[in-house]
Length: 116
Image (cartoon, rainbow, N blue to C red; front, side):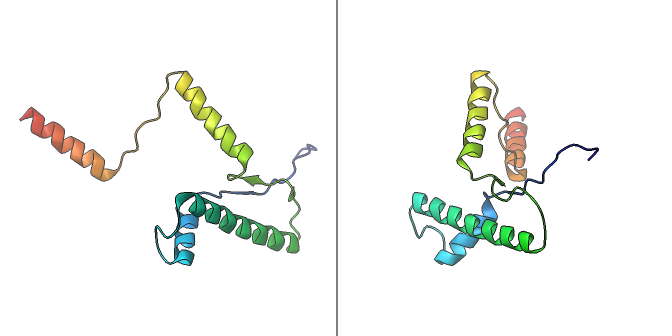
């Protein structure tokens, strides 16, 4: 690294559908617990696998900042994202609406019918 100190910071994306799907499997289906409890269980699931990965990587001899990893579920990271959305809003910027193929198709057909 040209003589620069560049420590490896391990990181994990701790949000998303794969984690939610696995927790739902463990619960035996969707909607088995209230939303707050479901989020807690997802956080516990992610933490369990982060710890397992850390243990395995250390055992393999990987050096890194294991005591301060990058986790998308850390409260500091979540606060940073929330502040970014607030900044966008204050500046009058809006994120584009998600575009699915079906949504685009429906809007196209609606626009085409209104021109006829």
